Every structure is written in C-alpha cells, then in structure tokens.
Length: 75
Image (cartoon, rainbow, N blue to C red; front, top):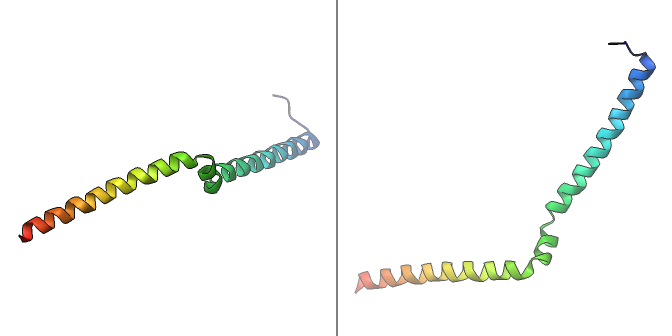
C-alpha cells in the first residue's frame, strides 16, 4: 500500500468532512419532514377523522356497556 502525503491525507479528511456535513443536513431535513405532524394531518385529514370517529364510537360503546353493567347490578 503506497503511503500518502500529508497534503493528500488532509484533502481526504476535508472531503470526508464536507460529505458528512451534507449527509447530516440531508438527514436533518428528512427527519423534520417526517415528524411534521401538522402537515401529515393536513394531508391525511379524511383518514384522521374516520379514525377519530371509530375511536370515539368504541370508547363511547365501552362506557355505555360499563354503565349498563353497573346499573344492572344495583337493581
């Protein structure tokens, strides 16, 4: 393996540093995009509303069933 000159090593380190900075900035922007819940909600509004309605129906049914069981035991 031929040895590199100090200038070549420094140039390689600087190139790696630039590539790493670019990768970090790219990753940062992708994470920001994926965690933007307001944009996600706006893009999937219909699905979110359907999910909320189903969850409300299930929770409401559970509360009604529990209340019904409690009132039967008291009679």
